[in-house]
Image (tube, rainbow, N blue to C red):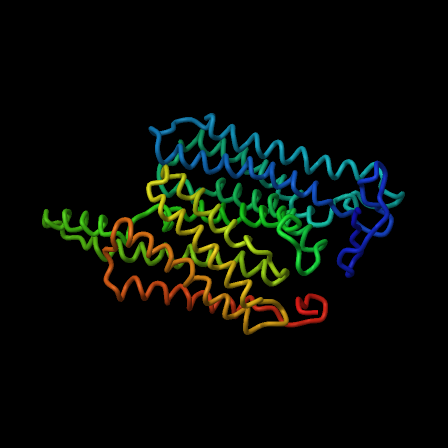
Length: 378
């Protein structure tokens, strides 16, 4: 059955529109169907995978000297396909717009920001081409901080989260995994993009805690270089875990604010982000992807047991504090077994505690106030 969104009411059943699929427009803005949201997010996946392939090329191939590469073509074609689909959704509704209604009333619920993101991404893409033509191709961390690339990030985030916003308005408090899938894919893509732009602080792409890194430090120190490589590596390793912890934890808590997430939600998100990030460096540390899978399963078990939600604030906060323990203790354990840890116990134990405290702090900021509308226990 199609759904129709009325202001202030959430989602309610509506009569099916023409062709038996399009929601009626008479009482307010139209709502997308599950299938339409899935198409949107799959096309957006094309775009995001293109971004990661481009990141792989920059990290593993010879210096790129032109804007026109197969890797750019991959994610720009993904953007084009996504843009055409979103515009199709809007124009299909325009044909059935009641007289006197604004064109904005043809934009599906949740897709207004995505429509603006299409414009931002297109402008940023043109600016990126001019930027590279004038200043050349970035070869290091500056590529992640150039203004056109950050504008592309913002535009992409606005586009690919449209299915998440649509599902937020349409789904009930306890959806099944299949029902939540477009929203989960949407959030996973957003999290992956955030991790991509912080790849210089990625625990899935570096081996700072390992015994091998400590051995390289001792080798460098043997030359008498007046530079403390050990402390720099420890700072980078701690920073990578704490930053990535917040990048992964925030979307999980955001989903838990709205839904009682089905088992597999955390496993899917965490494993996908770890795998995409690790792929940039050709899976140099494959055990960390396996550890992310195990950590995601532990988080799903934790959520199933604690049942966090608006009516269970204490459980929400406990979940926020324990998710980092499940994730990073698992990752450090995997490194210890496969490669050995080069950190002292105070450091590897302390960084897990620090991640847990930062998770608890984020939980305090994000914890929902209980209310009758979003209660998950009613």
